[in-house]
Image (cartoon, rainbow, N blue to C red; front, side, top):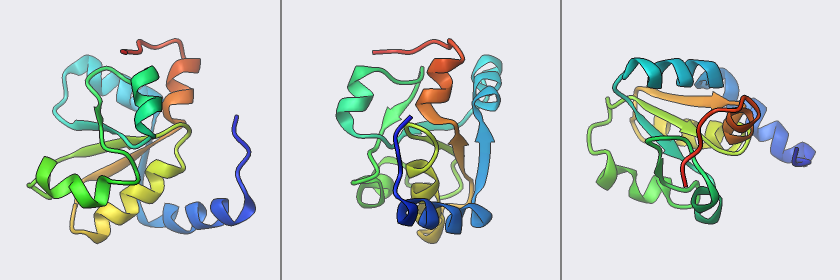
Length: 123
């Protein structure tokens, strides 16, 4: 697991009370049921290319605020964001909410948790 600096963790913890989060099993169950939502990988593009969750679309944390309105024009669309462990996706979820997106969830555990659970990964 990556070591995160105290200031980075502090900013992540400061947004957590303001966002919705789910766990890996929630997303796995929702995909299995065929629930309608947009799964967005906010990791670096090279991380996405190396492997990602089934049906995921890449919109990296560095560009998501810039590009989200073109990709997802309806701010009520349900979005589930994930990253490596759930930290970058929490920050991205907070920013999207500030932009008016009303149905944003960050997947705690991220890609690492998905992989550790032995779930399907696409390349």
